[in-house]
Length: 299
Length: 299
Image (cartoon, rainbow over all chains, first blue to last red; front, side):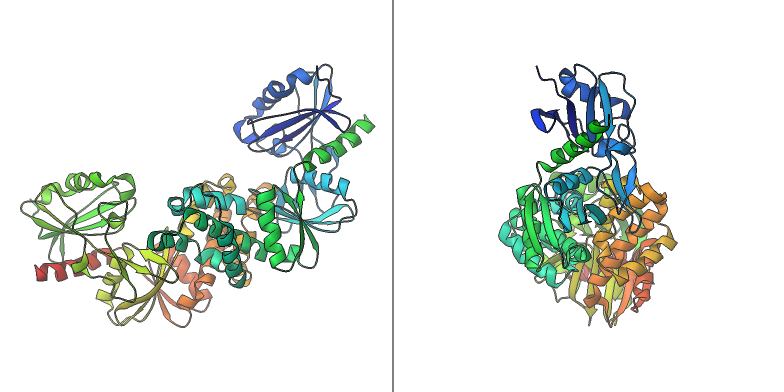
């Protein structure tokens, strides 16, 4: 029988992941598809109990991050304004619960006034990164549905920007007229790199280059994989051009799953950035562990 | 009882429109929602008979343009390569029919090799425009789901480009995370013009400015209408910047429904283009009439 000291929870829009923890050690890991997007506010406690209820013997701290703290989540957690440290677990939101064995802390997100921006979840990955690399000064790039570019200095987040590149790719490849050409095809690497050079020379291709993917399929038999590679390069290339103020002249750590983070790191290097790739799979748990240590020390 | 000499048909992805014609005169106009997108190849003849069957006494020429001629339409019509005149009705495709009273001609579309591009339907509007203004030399801009920029000279189309701006707006406002902020809200004009000036100064905002619309709604209570105006300006502004080679130094006629065409014409004028607005509602019928005159003269 697993009896954790505390439970780590990464609760995003589409996934719920939980770890039974003894200090910094993982006793067991589980996941479900009951993400925030699939739940109404009264559905969070049952979803958590369903996944992790058998871990609970006595009152157990649960440290959660991500969209669970959105306005449409379990309970709205605050946004802390940058510049600030990525985490302040003492400012977590504690939703009311029916099951007294749950002692839930939802970590705050981060906000920026100008330009307006918000994050929920990535701040915990950033805290994990800084726990491993406390002296890092530079930019973190976290690709995904919404890619975050985050300036970090002296252990604090000083500025950040969100780009909707992953969501744009999904909408264009699966729901626009380009679905007839791309669909679920995997991007071809050669097509990606060729088009990246083109969009670097002419960022307007991010607009002008979209429909030609469909036309090239009709006229020249462009393959779905080549079209996917080109679309990916158009969107990522334009993002990197627009994000230049955030990466130019600094080190850039690209954090994420190997394939996508590799495309970003390669594209940044090609633009002359000092970029390297960092596997991000463990960072959220490291960040949650940091938060737990701070919280449990004070309780 | 209406007995037309010929029937004009504008058959797009979402709509079917038909006119009973005596030469250049409209006897009756009808429309249905049986667009190409809703039909399989064997559904086109029944859809046309349902809408216009009672107009048929004897064998009647039907002159059709639009996506009805797509590969997934009734019968694939060819693409004619630019530079060329917008219409050559003698190269229409004639799908086999069961009802001998139908004598269907689907007009060819246009194609361009480099950059690859295609159109189906707009060539007939262009022919209508040139029937009214045969000496026009400059650029036609036809906003819509897929906006076409078309260079015209000496009665011929010399080059064109398609931008997916309308489709991008629909996907972002209704299906991305921005749906929570925008949805079906009508764009606010003041927000449109303010953001247009910003994106003209910094075209990278077409990428960087999207997520801030969501963040501004969360943090500052940005209204749906203001967010809609900003999104529209980000996309149209970036399109106009990318399309500059097609409009710079020429007259530009912006053809389309009042609201959207007005936004484009205003934005072009603000960029220093010699742009004016032209109501396009009658042009497709004028183009079809031109095609009918050429076809029926030869039969």
